[in-house]
Image (cartoon, rainbow, N blue to C red):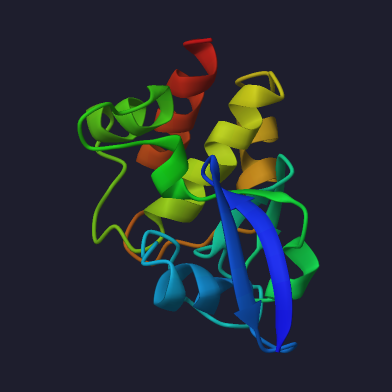
Length: 153
């Protein structure tokens, strides 16, 4: 076991973890943060996207020991049911949620884009979201929601 200390959604966490424990498993199974979804397990779908020190990372490919001393933000840290953020509101208003499985990854990436002041044009949105897959939609409402969130700065 390896001791790790890191911040998750503003809270300091100290855990003993196996050297090969994936961050997604730590978040979901040990910390109860089930908003981060396990999709493909090979870094292709984006459902497990979290921000590590402000940068998007795929938690299905990241070892928990690699976030030692870092700051992790999950979808739960970006939004809440009682106080939805700009991105979450845009997703609801634009009907960009169907089954919802991919939604946390899209919301994390859209928030990342918002923080970086990405210009709300289709080429940028498609480029940033190319690693996030949705099986339910044609992406049109997702793009509309992200565009709306980016314009709401």
